[in-house]
View 1 (cartoon, rainbow, N blue to C red):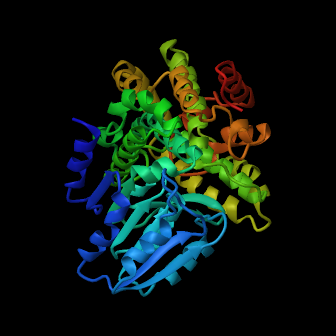
View 2: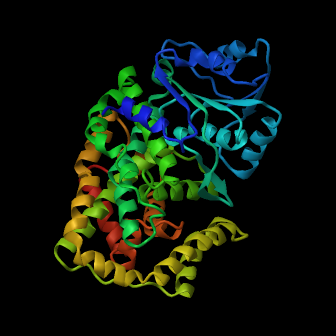
View 3: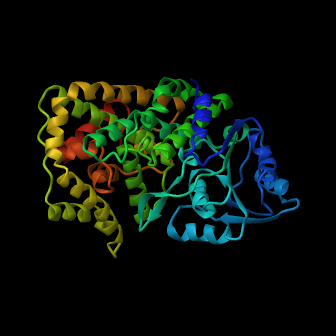
Length: 456
């Protein structure tokens, strides 16, 4: 099976609200045809930002697209100004601007699409993708800022994705490299999801969803160089990867097939920069670098399991855990809302681990580890190969190389505390609860990454 045929197969599932995906040269030009096919589309809201978007040939196409759909329709353009974040105020602005439309057209990249999925709700939503930057176009979830915390929130499926390789090739190379970084999470996130299933925290683990893109991992590594050079065919393949990855998350009903510890680290960095009013790097850039570190942590833990000396799992007392959460996040705002939000989610995780007797579950899993090892090993990838792919694409391998560099102390803070942010179980939780994620351990992983030319 190929990526394209796999996408077609998944679109035919009854649970999928995304009905069509056009990844081709000139796909953007079919926007009017897509709208004409809708039963009612007299009033269109076009949600976008204030940036110009150009094709590889230099055409500024956003105005052309809006003009092409305006004949016979009432078109209202809703422009989100500046560096757009999916916070409460911005989402509300988009909702208000799109309130009276029959259908919503979003022209932009990942954050715009997340906002558009919320603003459109059940109405037809057509997305003209302006970069192969993230995998969140093709699912029914949006990453929003709630009380300063990155939260994955149920939203709506887009109806149609229009992905034009002329547009992708005209996007800043850093955005497409970011998409490669987002996809590279396939080499750690499914393993985190499988690990969580051993503790009953999987929320419905599916091997099909976990491996939907992972089974094409070698193909992703092979296109890294072409993505970095903005080769249209390789960007189209990357867009296929991102689309299939988004579908896997929609099918799973959660982002776990593509979002584990590496995404939590990225969210932590965004939160820290937001609290300090610093710019954020591209999401996928951060994810790509974080994936290297998570891969190294997996190696450390697996080596201890293989040696038979993984320490016993010990759960912290709730009061102790709450103090740790407030120490990690209390500095972010005077009201304490961010710490409150994080503690509310972490407390649920801690209660689940207590109620399901996590220490016993770990002992039982270790007793049968030979079987689990076969699955985990197939989901992971060697850190060296991940670094090589990022390097081939010209993507950052260090947080100091990001489009918005991150200070070493912030990297350490994010790695050390990422398990405290949300109600997900990842390799960071296992390492922390077995005493393998101390300050010394974090420093050791950063040193190992530095030896590969990656990390802080």
